[in-house]
Image 1: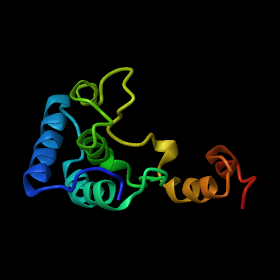
Image 2 (image 1 turned 90 degrees about the vertical axis):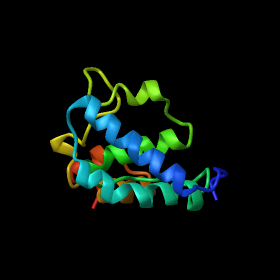
Image 3 (image 1 turned 135 degrees about the horizontal axis):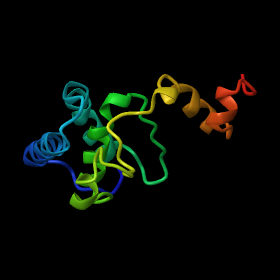
Length: 125
């Protein structure tokens, strides 16, 4: 376990409400993709992943669910989430078009210490 506290039903409901509020405030988002992913992300990050584990999200329309999961762990603040989809934010609403479909390849490259740029350029098979 990651050392995080086990989630209660109330914690999950709170995270989902924070997700919906974040998207409503930003006026954008892929609510269906986020809601379809948040339960598994919360479970993985709170109950399965270890501190040294790496996690690659290869579902661009679930970025908000990942941000709220990190918030539930205390790794992002309310102020961080308030910057969601704003200018100059680190919390975009989805992956840029040039990154779509590369998560699996980047994860494999990361595992073998290759960079995503090397994989996209075709220098890594």
